[in-house]
Image 1 (tube, helix red, strand yellow):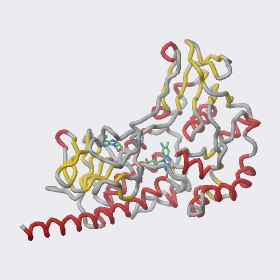
Image 2 (cartoon, helix red, strand yellow; image 1 turned 45 degrees about the vertical axis):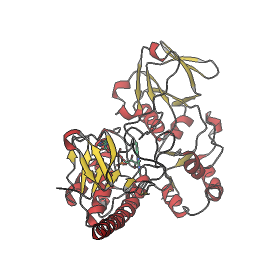
Image 3 (cartoon, protein in one colour; image 1 turned 90 degrees about the horizontal axis):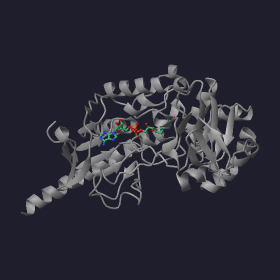
Image 4 (cartoon, protein in one colour; image 1 turned 90 degrees about the vertical axis):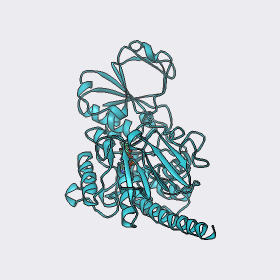
Length: 387
Ligand SMILES: Cc1cc2nc3c(=O)[nH]c(=O)nc-3n(C[C@H](O)[C@H](O)[C@H](O)COP(=O)(O)OP(=O)(O)OC[C@H]3O[C@@H](n4cnc5c(N)ncnc54)[C@H](O)[C@@H]3O)c2cc1C
């Protein structure tokens, strides 16, 4: 391809969806992907993972997932789907193309990726969060003689069998990894510092994400008020389990704090049964374990940090202005940014299913990019005529 209309960075769900929609609008794109395959991050997720959002709302544009995948497709099925998606739409990413920076070049952008560098008037950042695991530090952490790993490198319980394991953090990954370990007979404790929001994945047979979609235009406080009785009924008291309930409902948590509540797939039942122990936040590490808030010390052989991700795109976008917040997170995603020709996709937490938002955002971005390119061409022609 000589000069593409757009560069798409990343061949995960977001990059593939964006490239397909650009093609559907008659635009040519090049996908730069640093790994050697599509869906590289989904290949690395933990073995037991299934989508938390139902198949019916989690397809990318133009190709539904087969009904044989069931309501909540497995990680492996989703990877197969991403491969079929790339094949169906003849999406051929350039693999091994790690983009180190995206800089302004004339009226467009240059993605620097050594031999695979490319320039185009439009660039779409679909790089996800996986490169930014948040690894907090605690006093004494270096003295700990057991193993410490971030949830992003956890695969399955095998290496933990026979170990006393502490999972720090009660988000979706922490809750599910604790459950995975518990079901394999590992002695597992959850360290939970902050107040938490917990929802059932399904309520009365309906996926809760469907409720969030139905209520997406309600003010968050109103939606939370309406849902509170059903959530209480479905989840029960979490205070009695040693967990502090969040002081706001799940929709406000997502919208105001960017925090996703736990969609429970069985962890609460294990906590209720005493099979997963709950402790508070960790204050310090010791050579043989940790000290929790309040001073209690416990011995552990291994620690899993389910402490989330903190994406920071400042070094990727040294020239871009007005598109990132003070921590380097995109201010807007799945639509036009403040920089002409620069788009982010899949970058912001949502209550309505991130893959669903990627599907909708890909179409919005491709349409906006088409209009932008038409305007740029007209301006260039007008400039040439007046010369
Ligand atoms: C454990 C987990 C479960 C999830 N479950 C769901 C769910 O059930 N439903 C849902 O809607 N959402 C879910 N999400 C959220 C979200 O939909 C997924 O994370 C989804 O994979 C995001 O797609 P993406 O393409 O934006 O990012 P990714 O899948 O992370 O893909 C980004 C790609 O960009 C590449 N890349 C990164 N940096 C560069 C660079 N500098 N140069 C070149 N290539 C680069 C990476 O190698 C990767 O292939 C989940 C997230 C996690 C972490």
